[in-house]
Length: 194
Image (cartoon, rainbow, N blue to C red):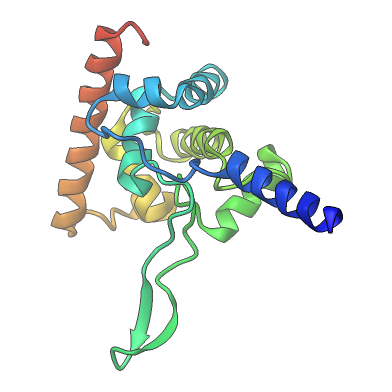
């Protein structure tokens, strides 16, 4: 019987240690509150900024748009005839909403096989890697949240072809991403985290 209770204790301990990482910060409109609630986010984003040059506010704005800082978020299910599940809209998953193929490419080139989309540090590094590649292929600076988001959403090839130009809904979202990056930048400067 004691072996059973030890097993239960270990399972509860593992669950307690791993819990909470997929919960969104309480105040998504306040960068200072986000990094105060989750200091590991700021540490990870600063490492990415040092390594790849992608400013913390740009990372934050795109992560906000992609996942609202929830680490295990997936795209919605698709349904045939309105009731029969036929799979997800895409393979996007995690903080950065990275697609399976792109994530595997990142793991092979940079992150290693233990990088996980549900790890904030891995997702932040992935974004730095991806946005640096975007800058090389499209000329969009890593500090340009609006156009980096458009290239992130459409893919680099789609961005270069201008596939976003006829999507007014996407252009509005990209403008909102830029506005949020600007807001996060002001907030982080005000609380001396920038």
